Amino acid sequence: MTANAANNEPKVLRSLTGRSGHLRLNRPKALNSLDHEMVVEITNALNAWLADESVDHVLITSDHPKAFCAGGDVRSVRDSVLSGDSSDGERFFEDEYVMNALIAKFAEAKPYVAVIDGIAMGGGLGVSLHGSHRIVTERASASMPEMAIGFVPDVGITHFSQHVSTALGGPSVAIARFAGLTGYRLTASDMLWAGWATDFVPSESLPDFLEVADREGLESALERYSLDADSAQARELIGRSQLAEWNDCITACFGADTWEEIARALDEAASSGTCADEVIEKFRGLIAAASPESLVAAVELYAANAGADVDLRKALDNELSLGKYLRHRPNFAEGVRAVLIDKDRNAKFVPERTEDVDVEAIRATLS
Ligand code: QUE
Image (cartoon, rainbow, N blue to C red; front, side, top):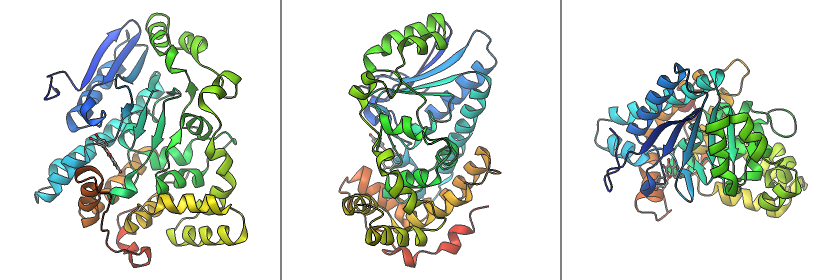
């Protein structure tokens, strides 16, 4: 059983209510970040509910007032790596990625509905975006902050984000890579525009939405409580998408397959006026927190996982393989220290320059 140390409550609450199989993330002290036990719990529930005809759909929600799920248990993984025997850490990632793939498979059989009413980062996107329905409220945000901890975007997001259709009508590898390389925090409006979210439900309607989903079914609940993102009522709550406004600049800079080309495109977009100076400054500011090794590695990973022939499982295998390499590099322990342990946000990454990163060693981990 997986319980919080403080109050002995399960870290994932599992229930069957009406037509819903309901998972509630309940590890408030860690902003619901996923540890190994929670991953196993979610996996077991989905395997049971896949075969259970009384379950019409799965809902995954959080009771935390601010967070949906802040990521994975990277502190424990760091401890595991530093102990000299990283096998516990490696098993965590293997099982987490099996869960990510299972969510995508489940969603092909019946609806898997994530209700994102707060912050979702890293692993939190892995338990939501692979579902069939990604519902956001005005309080939702999404980010891939791994560059700052010497890691790379994972949990299948390097696949999902490059294959999902944006509001412009097709996938955008530039938008996907921009999100992964900058750690930019997408708003609810950005998530809907980018295709990361499928539906908008105002937070004040959530209790009613969930009750109707349990009693009458998902379609009925969506019909009653979701709002068109372009409606005046929705605009009032979530505003316009910043990503949509930046799209031309992002497309000019972030579509390339190597970091070297992206860095050059940023320089050129600044000097040619393709991007406004303050927009380039904003992007550079976000990238400043990144480990240079992670920047180079992430672009290689996105390039490897972009092809139409790459399925989610193959993309996860690339993330696992590159991730294992990076977890054993000093930048991972140093990044987790600076962001999550000492919280000084003053990581000393090596090498300091992207030009000095061993890109061949990174490529050797990818297929
Ligand atoms: C990168 C990450 C994570 C992160 C920050 C990063 C991550 C994660 C957390 C996190 C945040 C708040 C908590 C907590 C963990 O932050 O995976 O326990 O209370 O879980 O820059 O990958």
